[in-house]
Amino acid sequence: MNRTDFETELSAQGYREVVDRQMPAGHINSEHAHEFDARLMVLEGEMTVACDGEERTYRAGDTFAMSAGRWHAERSGPDGVRYLAGRRYHQAPAS
Image 1 (cartoon, rainbow, N blue to C red):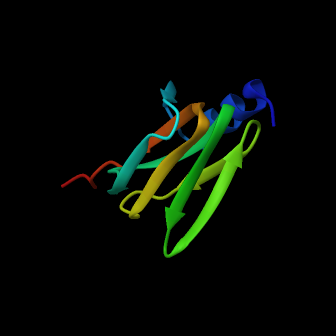
Image 2: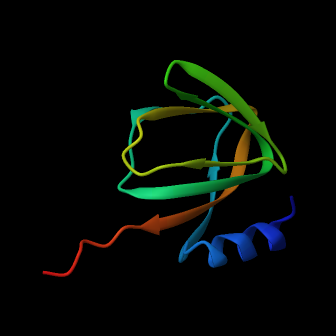
């Protein structure tokens, strides 16, 4: 997938915030969860995501999604990683 198509999909799916992020080589983000749904596209390098006892490595052009509240860990590859991250926040119901 290319960046333009990915950003078009994010917008259509309600992802209003898109950030261009990087992690240096071998960086580890220990287990955590987000308050938002996330969709990522790897632009350069690679990232391994551990979730529910499984690991999967994503490389340039790969995309993946992580639901809000889902616990996971991330590790960048030997050359680091650069990625686009779309964030979709859930609003509380009106009272």
